[in-house]
Length: 173
Image: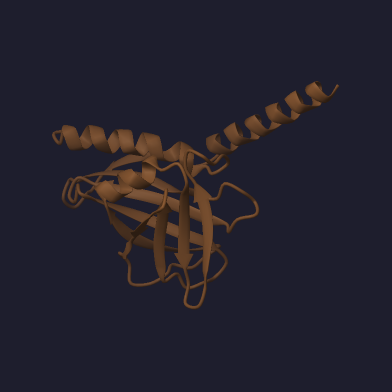
């Protein structure tokens, strides 16, 4: 009886995770109408692996116009001023530079940052990634990466990396 209950709970949890992934935005490719650059974009999705963590979102964008950079969008629920973004990837801290002059407000408060392609790849391959979203007098933390389950972003990063690496190796696309 206990085994059947455990299998049922596992099936429901796995089903919900798959449904959650299917119900979130996926990778898109676009051509910049101004300069013809190829843009790979993953709209923000959950970057929190647990309900006990801060409720963060994380998205990313790469352009063939600036192939050595990734623009990331980080946010949290509510109306807050976002001042900074950093990641602790398996003990190594990666600081992101602001790429927008201020926070965008709505249901989610979000801000764009920029990080090098090399730093982004470290972040993408991390086992334990802590995302620190700084506000004026406080900060909040969420986690994702290979040693965590539940963060939708974990399923969105690999296709983004694969598409960007394909475009970086064959810029004629």
